Length: 136
Image 1: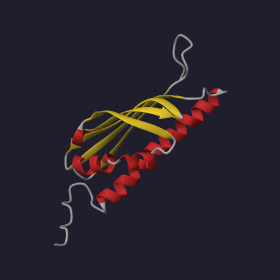
Image 2: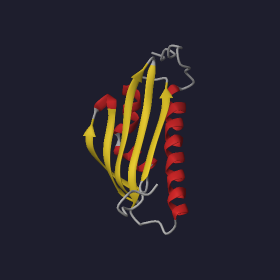
Image 3: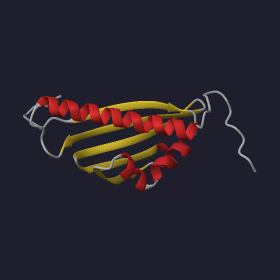
């Protein structure tokens, strides 16, 4: 996980999760900065590209320094949620295993966020099955 020229080691996480809801529904879950603080409490995020229903790109500060992106790709009757985190710990790890632990922690957290959104936003809907009508 180290890079050439004695550069600090980096964390590079890519995750994908299918949600059986439209991209606009997923985008709304990420629109509020209060959600960012809940999902990533030790990071300070600043939007550098707002792509609307296609997602967001942030600069990352705090425990990590780098960039993060949520890309929302329309697929069939839902959305493929792509998550990218490319960052370096603000405090260099003392041992290689510390970096590995940080990587594992961030990868598991990314998947937990995606699965939580899947459960909440799909509300039991299965792919290929139309959403339940909402009461009037």
